[in-house]
Image 1 (cartoon, helix red, strand yellow):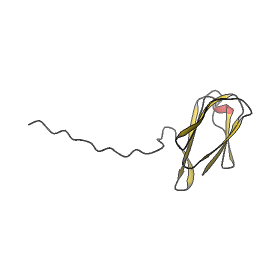
Image 2: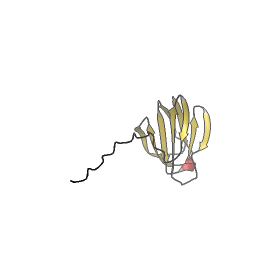
Image 3: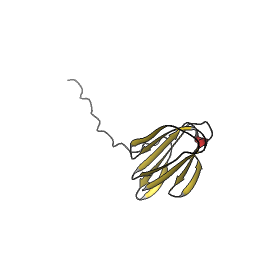
Length: 106
């Protein structure tokens, strides 16, 4: 289980996705504190990385990034361990689709 606490230190737009479902989207004011629990994954995107501080399972992660910068971070449960995904990594690895080979016209 992922326990995430988000503290807003400067006004910031945020979108929080828990286990694939958007649970928070909008502008939060300084002083707001939100808590989320996820079974599989949590994704947080903000338009003000310096205005959003995170605590993951009791560990203070500090600000998400730089003030005024768009930042997106994702954590997933992988074999019982919580790991942060590198930016741009798909949350679920798509299975390869079978390719159809064209038959030459005869």
